[in-house]
Image (cartoon, rainbow, N blue to C red; front, side):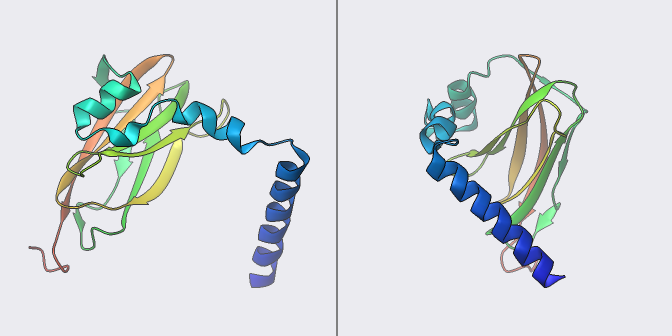
Length: 154
């Protein structure tokens, strides 16, 4: 099984490299749209949302955040966000009590399942806020995560 995984990874890496060197994929074109505004400069949740252009946001139970209630290690907290809202095109993860709350932005393809997973660093107990863009409207959900010191529940 390890050999198959290695071969699969090698083929994907080779194809990606060939596409980039042949000019089919341009790193400038890929990253240009996502870096129009530097969201990482936001120092608060409200400021991050303002930079993203989110003014009117509705809470939705169709957004699910899967994360541990208690994270024993704030350096790597696994978080999954799923949107069941039809027409979801973007999912943004914000960590409210981090020095820079903007954590990640995911663009969802037209026929792709709106589900993402990542690991985030959290300085202290905080809310993870998911912002979902669907049909040119914004929706949100949040989940509180208690970050302990040394895994002792403190």
